[in-house]
Amino acid sequence: MSTSLQSERLELVSMDATVLQALLDGNFHNAAHIGGFLIPADILLRRSALVRRVEQLRDDPSLLPWLLRAVVVRESQTMCGRIGFHSRPGPPDLASVAPDGVELGYEIDPRFRRRGFAKEAALALMKWAFTQHGQKCFVLSISPSNEPSLAMAHSMGFVECGSQLDEEDGLELYFVRRLDQWPDEWSRVLGA
Image 1 (spheres, one colour):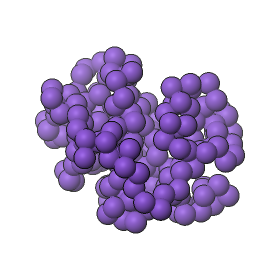
Image 2: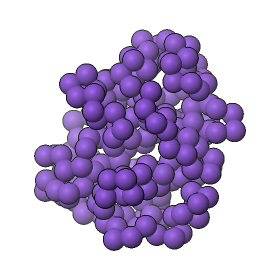
Image 3: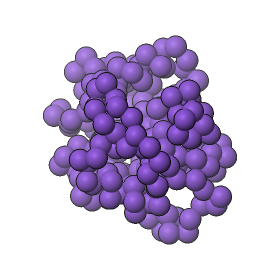
Image 4: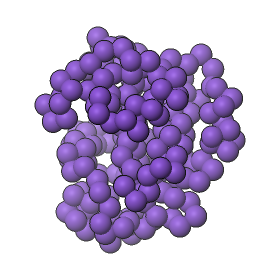
């Protein structure tokens, strides 16, 4: 496994192709053993996201730090969702929106929602990209009907900058946040 990132309440653990394939196969026990954290047998994870990331990792294992990470509640060592970038910064699909950007995606299981885990995980991953790789442009694509994610994006200073029609998800709005420095209020959310 790759290194993990920690915030006040969470640990973001990189999931390699072996862990992702075990999740896809429904072998949560094996995935948990490899990953080193508990995985609820009924956790909700979008299969399509796991399939895409397995394919990317098989094509280019060096993408591991950028792609999917388990969002693990530190106190219980239980996976509550997933987070990761869709690629390295500057992918062709963001050329018209933010050519220097990196797109972030996340999913928190319903029973763990409304606790601020998505925002805390997003900030921890963004801080890693900003401090370790100099990444200053972040992108979110959100369904216009996903009010919690829209509220989170606005609270983090993301600005709507376009839209796309996704084959799987339908209409998605693009939001961008550019950073010159790391905001102090974000450090407080991370407990740093």
